[in-house]
Image 1: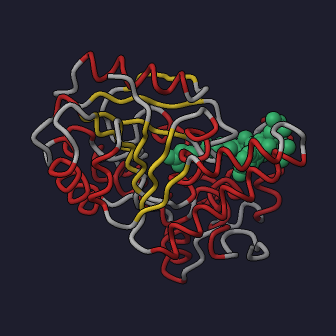
Image 2: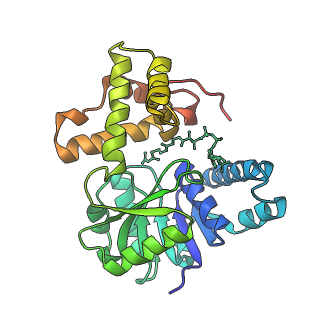
Image 3: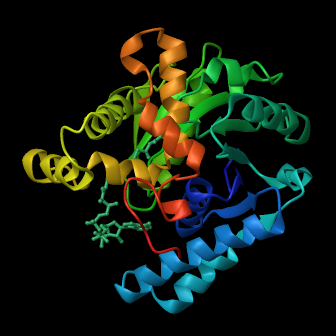
Length: 285
Ligand code: CAA
């Protein structure tokens, strides 16, 4: 079956980024969230991101309008029935994802692939909430989605080869480079990235350097495009903490224990760019 319409669950920074890329690649997009306000915020983020591309003369204003027109915002999940392929990009919370997959399983036709943009949770477990585990797969995009080339593709225990091939082909149609990873906590990307970020937070916590020094060392010394603390602010400190807890619990090794400073920041509501404050301060947009 040809994929024409992609259903995206969640209009946050990942969901809206995926929606933008899919609509730019000429797919019709159905993007859902739990309220009209969240759907509208997602659309507004896409509009701002496309404006930057217009300014850089990568797309024209009419092209921007066409892309926006291909994105349909919904709050009633029942409308996901019209989608040929689902990408779930809700909050990184296992209970929430299990309930969304159970709901999607009841809504979408039996032939539809249900993929998750989870950054660390078990695809095998998510698939168990459905009656089609062979059609459940991980499709992990990187943030900011329009700028990052990678998509990690993760097969659960029961995922079929056909589901893998279709998902890989879709990632390529979205202009991304797919890489296969096995279903382990954090897959490849976050197994490596998140402990580095946690160590940077410990480095701050223990007073080895201040936030500017830590990020400057990694930018100028290791040629990273941004420092680990600024990257944590971009990802969202709540998401970084959730991934660390998944690594810690899933792999059982104390080297993954989250730094107390990270927990404190999350408790305080310092979640990074999205709240205007994390390890650095940001003007709220
Ligand atoms: N939306 C759309 N495009 C964006 C963008 C956004 N939010 N942010 C940047 N871009 C694009 C720009 O348009 C620009 O494109 P061109 O080169 O084609 O003109 C390109 O990205 C570079 O942007 P800028 O010149 O404005 O800024 P920069 O050179 O400082 O790069 C960056 C910004 C791409 C974010 C860069 O700093 C970077 O690569 N940082 C690391 C990001 C990273 O590691 N992401 C992975 C996070 S981990 C993750 O997502 C997985 C997880 O599960 C936690």
